Length: 441
Image (cartoon, rainbow, N blue to C red; front, top):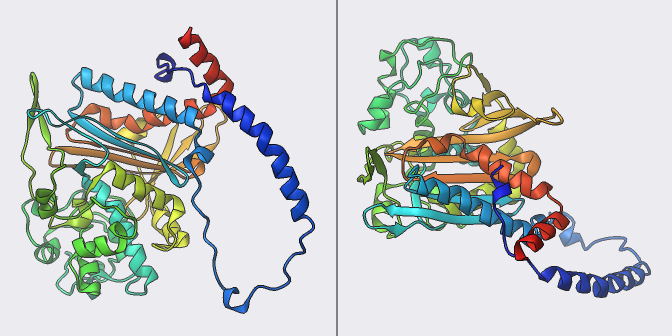
């Protein structure tokens, strides 16, 4: 196991914790005794009758003790430093969230292999199709606001939208677009997106493509028609999508380095350059403009620390941005994903997959108990960047990894890191102390 070969230094603070426990416990009992004599209030002030008290953030130690955090840091550093030694990657940045806390964020390797500049948690990467999750959530926000509905017809918002069948043209809804169930063949007109054609031009050309199935009946992954969800948001708000996503998501969540434009990357001095693998190393590439004209499909830029804040939100910690009930609609499985050829279908315990609105929804079975659990996931790839994000709702856990190169490590970094976290959380504190004591001898 990855964790078993990683050791740390002894943590003497445990004895201080014991002393504090002895002091604090009698005090707590006294407070509880005094409180029992205070009569309960019969009525609250009328002006507070309808006020909703949101849960207050708790310190990370409540969810993930310092001893666990130290072990996690060591394990994550070992995992990525080994990959760097073996030249599997150029650079990477990682964020891990537990409940309402970012329990780990950090960077590894180089932003540019020639300059040897170091990646950190604030280094910005392009996240590719992980952007689709932002599109699903952003649509949900506007559904909440009453500006659109999941069942809005695309043609009602984009009048020049055309499919080969007039009947199907009038059937396609926003929910079909966001769940890749329009009936069009796999990756229809992705080439036009990458060539930079305007979305309105592409919308009028779908009549050149013969559909495979009726809308809503089959899953076929798309970029071009998916990006129309962003075009609709621009039309109902009257603003560019890069500004809408900033106003509705980046600013409220304090994702200070996140953006959705090529110009924003140019203005930043902490950006990871994409890289191409050579026979004896890596070559840095230029950042291109692909997908910045189709932000919903793949145009978001973010750092690991940004993605940590994003995952905190996805775990339900910011109902002021979007209510959990609407988020449930975004994550609700809309269509089953068949086959067994995708990389995530080879993860341990994999059972089945669906697609919601901009998100993959997987079911995994526990190896010991056989109990099923849900994982909300997406991967991304653009301009030689690679990204992975996974939310484990049952564990109140989120993991995101950003790379500035295409690499094999990306395909299983999520289950590997999840395994590390599980091992750490399942190990009793006393076992930690014993191992640390042996190292100190």
